[in-house]
Image 1 (cartoon, each protein chain N blue to C red):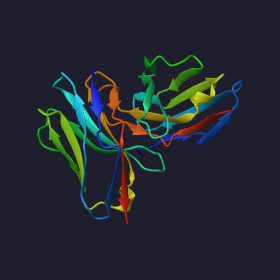
Image 2 (cartoon, one colour):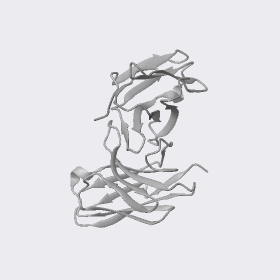
Image 3 (cartoon, rainbow over the protein chains, first blue to last red):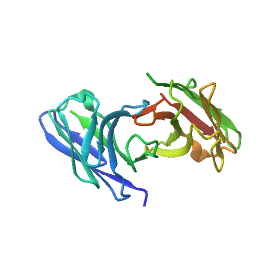
Image 4 (cartoon, chains in turn cyan, green):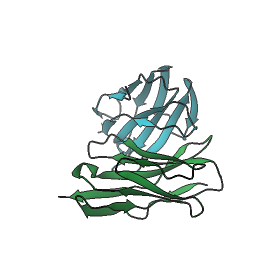
Amino acid sequence: DTEVTQTPKHLVMGMTNKKSLKCEQHMGHRAMYWYKQKAKKPPELMFVYSYEKLSINESVPSRFSPECPNSSLLNLHLHALQPEDSALYLCASSQEAFSGNTIYFGEGSWLTVV
Amino acid sequence: AQTVTQSQPEMSVQEAETVTLSCTYDTSESNYYLFWYKQPPSRQMILVIRQEAYKQQNATENRFSVNFQKAAKSFSLKISDSQLGDTAMYFCAFQNRDDKIIFGKGTRLHILP
């Protein structure tokens, strides 16, 4: 099983809403990631969790709040977003962080902020 | 700072032809990893091929192979007998040990019937 599953696949939210994106992997990976991807651009790293601890926060605005409840789950809590935050949000995992391991990506959650 | 450059924003080839995608990178490190990822229109990004810098032998995966030139800091991807399903955005990526992965800007590849 080499799957990273993300829900929901599509999300439309208003600028005052609070919503969450969810991600799950059952590969026993100890590193999990959130990326943001705009159309025709490479993914931009947002957060890295290693062994359930936040390892990297790429200066992401506080309206994005990550959470790693356990080694298989990763959430991204969204609050007071702006229209420019509309993008594809990719969750990913790897065996270890920063070790050259293959990163496995989910299909992504399409977020539209209105 | 490490950088990854993909000089071909877009390419088109006929089905069954061979195509080579270019990638160069810049680093002062000697121990690192290189990747090619494919992102088809369905959007899930998947690994095509992975190369460890200390291994001189070029990695291959079926119809996909790389030409890794460490001294020139070049890591090109060759796709042989291209198929319609190879149509995708291809990202070259670089990772130093103990650091995050860095993606190039991508090459959009169209395989024409």
